[in-house]
Length: 495
Image 1: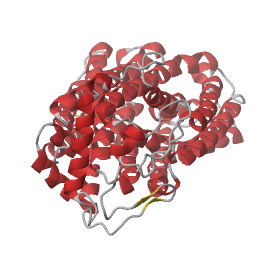
Image 2: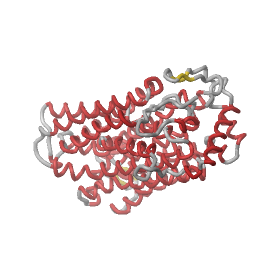
Image 3: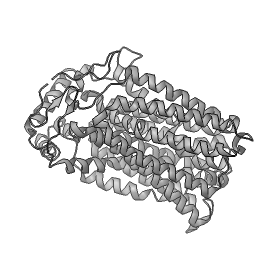
Image 4: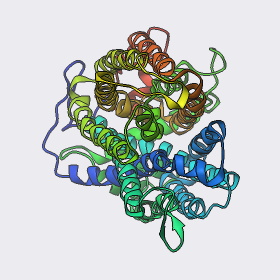
């Protein structure tokens, strides 16, 4: 398929990037969409500082605690599936706004919960909103970003997630410190842990306002007959010299082809009921969660208290870990469109397997049992360093790259729906890891869970080596031509 002039592309060397006066517009739209990732990260970690206080407030055991922490993830899975369905009917920006409203309302209701079980309900509502945002942001960014910078802009989703995690942990720490503890009263007779949820209305409101102001995806506009609006959007995001009319014609041709292949627009395929490319997306999502990253962010305060840190010290360690996660995401942003997706994923898998293995060994040297475990001497320092190196490897590779790949690897006719299914699988995997950690920690200590996560990290290396494509520099309209058979290694689309 021919490419518009002004944006030449090499099969191996990647795209040649010309001067780009509209780059700031593309970046601005990507940043606005990525605020959904901020909500994602904030909601993922805001529960961190509230776990122990919620246990005390409602007098619940570790198994119920795991449900309270993890139940939002099932809502996220449903929201991801729903968002993928609605995006093709309502458009990307309207579905963004729906996610913002759900998260706004649930944040208030979570903060005034009167029992563990109504808190569960509001956490599910929050999850639906976050699940919607998790699907729409990468799809929208992929559809408005020029191919030459799609990886970097797609990585903004993960950067926003890491910033959301940091903001949640920092606000948790500030609120708990101000009140003298997460379970202590802060303002208006409400405990600090309740305010940890309530402050989430601020980013939810920002996301909702941005969703009302940013333009719709040009591909959705063309699909719904709004050709001139699509041209106006593309004119502000394409490189100087790119032929807007040629891009519109290219998208129209793809849509026309999709209509002829409407019977193939289903995700169904010959292999276990789904297309091979959908299975690759699902397994990417599952491996991203099965390495245990969210155990670090959901339970890090509880975990570090278990190895001898005071509550205030545990909050500080968790906050430092989240800062590390933010900073290393810039490594991915710098390298993704230069090095490519596969090399970074392979490096991340190897690094995570080693660091998780070190953590598993460190916790074999602990004394005590269950949640009363203590880690003495240098082993505590070794575990802390290994945990942060694990975050470095994850944050620079699997964290951002999975979202980039999910946004760009699927053919146009199934992108939103396939992304919804893959993201739903990610949330379900996240739920399984999160809900299983407290009882595993209580029964076996931390060593066995971390050994399990290390094994999954090692398996992710071989999965990437054998099955994951390289999509660097390939236009979205050309993804149709990328092979998706058992030997799919990211062969370039035909020109």
